[in-house]
Length: 329
Figure (cartoon, rainbow, N blue to C red):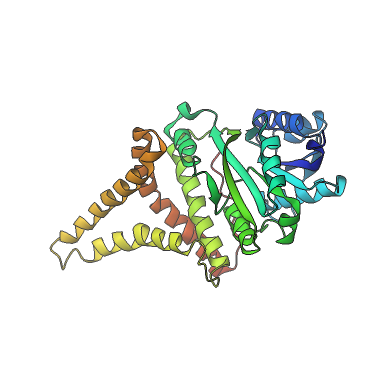
């Protein structure tokens, strides 16, 4: 019980239904200190959480809903109720913590004071439901060892989290890598261990959902790289430039040069085959060759919705508007 008493859990969600119930049941099985933050659900999520005797915070409309804002508010409430806590496990409402994960991650954080974050393997619960679910599971199989960033599920040291001011609440996506960037600047380390952490239910069954998720990714690259545009590390600058190269520059060059090349500039589209092959070759060491093939195809295709996300961010920036949430479920 001594270990459990040192960490609490913050779960966030919006209309997650039965997934949230499973999430909260798994959470309170690993720690008696849990807070759920709801972002305007209309499916009874708040009532379901309270029926499990979980502390609930309902975000008001004083600011736009974001996962970053929800996690900050949840952590504040958790520490207000339980100020002795030294660690906080963040988990999304469509995820379920795997038994034993928190104790394992906690022991590693306690053993190394230079660590700010410990994360593990997020697994897709239904990879067979669609190629998009399967690609999510494939994507989350990141290298074990010291990492540049974590995802939405991670165990963090409260002191390190507070030192950098928590998540950037205005970000609609990409808030975890951005937080980890600031943690690393302060000397904190992020460790990805070879241990199952959560089950996730992507429920991504249609191409249109995948497309919206890719738009959100492009928006994240644009917003975070713009936020840190003056930093010497150039955080996410390269990724954003690649999106513009493959999403806009290559197609435009191919079209513009058609008259002066007698149509030969159309061969520039063959470069996408090379890009897809390079992505496939890099990914095939992760396991399934067939999934690596699809990963190469969809990573290449994603440059177009990612460009859409980049354009959305910069257009809103020029107009002085804040971007709304981009949801794919």
